[in-house]
Image (cartoon, rainbow, N blue to C red; front, side):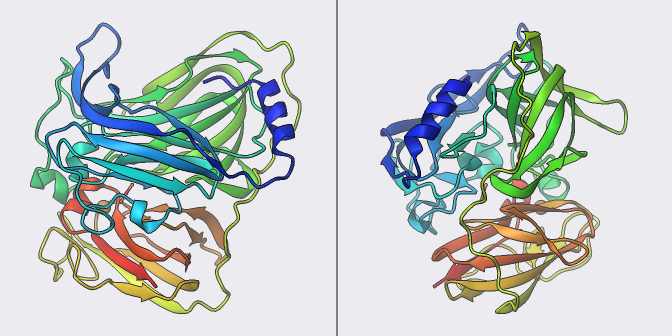
Amino acid sequence: MTLNRRHFMMSAVAASGMPHLALAAPFTLRAGPVTAQILPEGDGTTQLLGFNGSSPGPELRYRAGDMVDIRFENGIDQGSAIHWHGIRIDNAMDGVPYMTQPMVESGESFGYRFTLPDAGTYWYHSHNRSWEQVARGLYGPLIVEEINPPVVDHDITVMVDDWRIERTGEIIEDFGNRHDFSHAGRLGTFARIIASVSEVRKGDRVRLRLINTATARVFPLEIAGISGKVVALDGMPLDKAEDIGPLMMAPAQRVDIIADVQDTVRFIFPTRQEPYELGSIGVSGESPAPTRLPITALPAANVRMPSAQPDHMLVLRMQGGAMGGAHEGEDIWSFNGVSGLTDDPWQTFIQGQTARIQLINDTNFPHGIHLHGHHFHEVLEDGSLGPFRDTTLLQRQQTRDILCVFDNPGKWLVHCHMLGHQASGMKTWVEVV
Ligand code: C2O
Ligand code: CU
């Protein structure tokens, strides 16, 4: 979708300082089998699962403050449910079967209704057998526009993904094999970007909303042909717009960039051999009036800052996996020696409490740890507050503290977003009362 400046000017006037509360038009998301062109045009197609006939599913676009009304119809032959990743959502709408809602069995449907408190780049995906259903294509972007969005010529969603497919495009049906689970997860044989816009002009100002939708692959990423700033991570604005350094995206992480186009925008995955080109956005023509405005920070989200004295000091230790040390969990992976969900939560927080959690990766694989229903601050090495994220990447044997205000009541999963790791033990849950 192309958003021109006039549209933004008008919406800025229309907003006029009033809080925006609107019931968005009802929408249906129907999961079912789809045929997708993952390989380049002309090569074989891939049988996947998708929403409303495509994988990725349709881009859902709302404005901050909107009340969403989505009916999910399950047209696949397994139970499913949809999780709205990164949204600080009403717990009953979080999409976790058996924890926040019943399983939506094949042929059944479920109504999701929730408000979107924060502008930003989010996504939705299946939360049942996600190691299979997400790998088969059940996901899509969920974009929440600011009430007064920054002025850009194009607002572009760029999903980065990989697929395990044959050269003919056929999907390789070895989902859930224990070898993948105990190693880096289901890594694909083919990777590319899927961008919502294929062509821009030289001099255009663009917003790139990158989303890593892969089930397991961490993407280091270089973007050629633009000059600009990173303005948000995992949907949440950075305090200051920052130079675009080397990007490293764990599964489920998002990066928002605002930049000016200088040349073909190329997305490059630097590998140990040679760089792998994930795709590009072409350039044709020149903008007659390139903006000269500086790229500044997005308006801050309305969130509570952690208290200086945390109410809880906790440790969450990742253990297990191939070449890992012994641990007490009963599956491949564990948190603090416990694999999978227990009847009682790992922790109970009183609404509004701050916890400082030391995440220790005691394994030989990276993990992207995701907390539902909240964002948290990464604590930087010098002790200062880092970015506000919903998924944090821990490289092998790395330790990082996070600070979280648990202010959203309900039952919330904490799990690795390498979906095979989640399926084989690396998950737990907390309760906010
Ligand atoms: Cu995006 Cu529980 O996951
Ligand atoms: Cu993991």
